[in-house]
Length: 408
Image 1 (tube, rainbow, N blue to C red):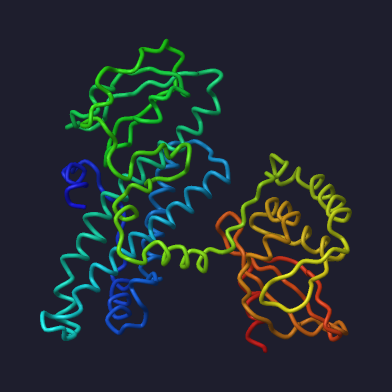
Image 2 (image 1 turned 90 degrees about the horizontal axis):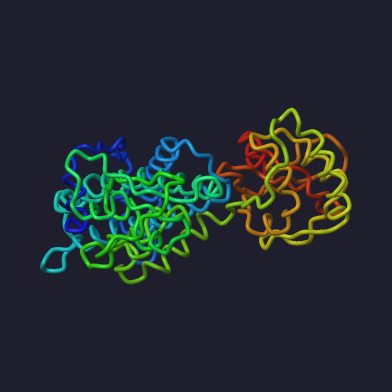
């Protein structure tokens, strides 16, 4: 990694705006030392949460710098890719330090000795390497947002121009591309782009100037993208590609560990495929009425199920009314989501049940299922009655709903 990030680390103009939480490191070290989990087959959750948080901040910063408005589904692609990259990075980190647990005689080192021995490794993982990754993530998120905007306005500005680096000491590898103008769909952009070097500070600009043609020598080995940056994040939503060493050269068990962890950690990442049909919240009431009418026709009287809750869950007219009337931070997206309720509930995380606070006769239990809408947690509410029947009741984004789980 030092060799891969060498040139980027030398660029002092880039200043990482993150701090890796020291308490997270302390908890993780204790977790690994006490062998509470297996570093080959699992992902240390606190390290993942902190790493994922940092890459999310980098993404937010890059998109904000661009000023482009990303489609919801494309931002979800970026977030998912960041989660995958974070999990692979953590698997590499936890196994690097776990290899130092035992001395040359095979005896477990005292905790303080081990902690001191792995300090240089951690210094690389959560400072030097992460700084380069953070800065590059900011740049690549910016460029991904730019690319989405280029595609949106391609009928007006059909060509892209490779702009010179803004670095005071630009690398020589991209100079050959400066000033290149080609159509946005030209194959050249699938092979070479600003951002395919670590901390590259070149950029693209949309233009209607005539194409220049691809530069000569652009297929030479020295002009090829760096590992991990050989994709177009504006197309696939990956700030780091699968050729990055964290993913391409892994410890045994890494791929299965990441797959299992993310399935458990992010099983309910609700993707709203139907965008809300409104410009302002005040104008959304008409669409809400449409949703109620459509849902009554398509869903009323049908049933859904969850693998951890016995029996079927009925969708009633009241289910639809309660769902659509419920206030919510993502009100419009929440309403559109009802048409995907079967698939969403199936993937939701079942949290448990508690006594129904309602004084109405018949209702006995409230079951809660956690999902995410645009990355924010919400809870689907199912009511169970004395006769054993279950009804989809509503949805809420208020954490107060979790208080009902305390009364079992």
